[in-house]
Image (cartoon, rainbow, N blue to C red; front, side):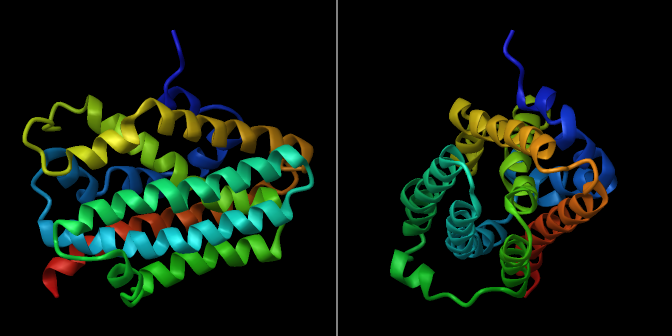
Length: 232
């Protein structure tokens, strides 16, 4: 039987990072915004605001992967970083554009939207970590987003409360629950586990755990930002 994302998140150095952040990780992957996605009763205004900001977020994360390519010492690492950057630009951002087209938003219009403080805080934090540190620091800062979304989708797909038929957010769920995205998340976990061995991760665990914790809390704040949009 092939391991699932829920099997892999518990393994190795990544598993220790995930355990170290405790409730912060649980609060992120089980956030009320996420539960609303699964039930299909998340207010449309909350999802729309989240999606608009996530589009801007992805622009900065593409830059972070360009930085990862620069920080790479091995050609394979450089290729992986470049592939991730192109996947964001050519695939994931296009999904956001397709979603928002139904609300009358164009790609140019989305790109011109102002960044929320939560978007600025999260993305610039990740880039700052990458600028100050090495590739392992940057990969750890990126991991809560990549791996967390796969874990969230897997949990939602297995939850009795999740409604698939008629769920307006079914396409979002399917995108992050698909085999290719789960494989990406597992590859990210494996890469961190291997890189930690090569780059002295054990001696740096406290620092890397702080980075992982901060990025995880910023992910939770991003969900909350979407919910708060309904109160504006």
